[in-house]
Length: 101
Image (tube, rainbow, N blue to C red; front, side):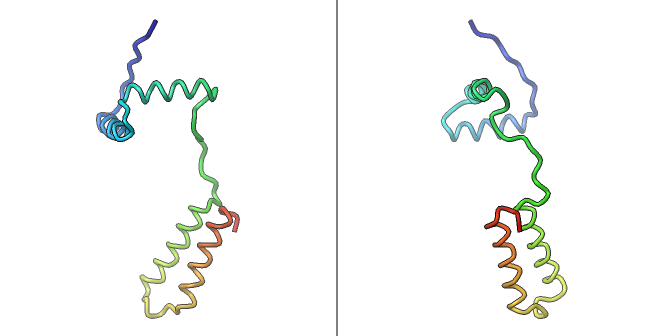
């Protein structure tokens, strides 16, 4: 026995999702069935649904890039190579530590 499931979604979202699934070799209904089956196996949503940690590596890396951009707005000629390298090293440490630096 099967049931019909109808879901209203934005046309753009449907098109974008269909294009992704087509590249994976499946159609949209198959992708929805996979999602539902995996939800049953996981006994919940089959992917993480949490807000990013305020101290996440990505956030800290973006902040480092923002500082570099701020330097460049003032004048690149005023920034020493040591300062540039220090910012790059700080961003790398943050990424390597998983956001704990």
